[in-house]
Image (cartoon, rainbow, N blue to C red; front, top):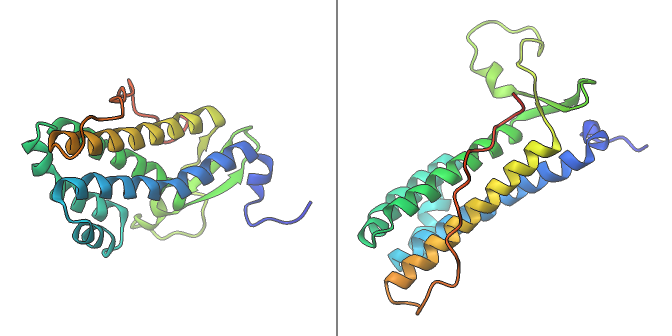
Length: 190
């Protein structure tokens, strides 16, 4: 078998595929958020540049929130815009957790990972990685997370269309409002 930089992903290939989709697909949510804001502000260029010039996912969400919140409140869509912002914030937590970790097979039958940022925040002198908290994911959890990303994409798109509809830019919203999940997906197996 050829060597891989992520050899645990050779064993946990289903998990690896979903993790890859979450990491690569997160930007689609940011673009959806940008479109959600720019349609009510009528300034694609300014919104795109305001959101994507600074680095960092949290900063982009904060900027989008600041640029769009009052506009959506004016259209009686403040709750829905707030739901979309909350949803993308949770997706960001998932994305950042997976983007800043080390994956391995701890022989538990589940894909294991540790978050290096956890160690970096510690004020104690560190000698190795053994003090990290070992977390796990499986296909079921990752599927739940992916479905939450899909929900987030849908609530962003619905809010975008509903804002345009209420501004009379389109004659109807072609999308059905997505049902909010009953609970947020966990970040790892408890």
